[in-house]
Image (cartoon, rainbow, N blue to C red; front, side, top):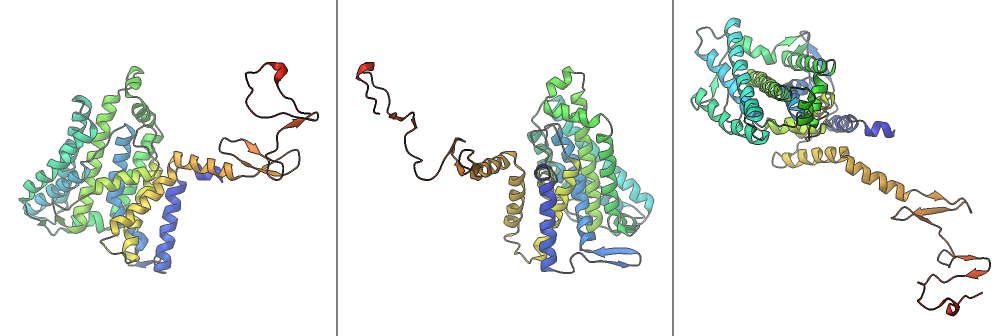
Length: 388
């Protein structure tokens, strides 16, 4: 049981189970899934589809955090990517053409990759702190998206583009297949090759890894580029869901949700070891939590407070220091048997045990002598009193 409690997936999965149980109690049909025209419909499918963009961004964020960095610009990249794709489709003579959609997606992803490379350039070449470097694009990115859309919300009608999110393949929405497929590819790449070990070495000690021959700057630059590319793909899924490019609201605060998902999954913001499986569980917790707010009928005014309470609870339970405090408290309350009389003693604050019951405060005696526990005086030895 102790090993299970220490596993990095225990508390995220436990939180997910609690949320599912709460939703099922409030709405018994929560877990029901129906099949219509060979397609799966239901709350679990909706949660997975809604979690697809967040999973892509959290995946890239995990790699960046593993190198002791952070990327606050992913929400702006989402807005820019969706704006570029929909503006190109809107200006095209044939918005419903698959070729037009492919070109639009390619341009959007290419620009997202360049934005990620820009973040990596600021961090690795110019030596700017990651939080400051990405804050620049976080602020300027939405302005770029506003320039692309002309300050208006661009809406288009294109079935191939809409199918990137709402289309079905083998009974599940295409967004789920895209997000899960890329997650598997990245997980296999970093865990079945030396790349994962090199990323952890870079995050633990970049200077030492460079001295050991690891190209830490190249790796850091690469993960920022990958994070930008994944954020751009998430922007494609978000805009394909609404078929509108809203520069102000597209991807708003999604960077915070991604960071929360990574932290809930057990990856430390200090860099080094990372857990992709934990990130996946954290994304499901965030997505299910957003659905729980709707099912339980919680007021939108207190929704952020409710989500914050759940996230804080999970992160505190994962904290090594908090778990250590609980363990120490449990040891202090545990009765310790006394080998002489078979009685139980309570552990004191300093870990020493003392017998309970009558005579516990009596002075220590031996050979018929009771020696006072007072401090020795400065008097000569012949003047000390010894009572028989």
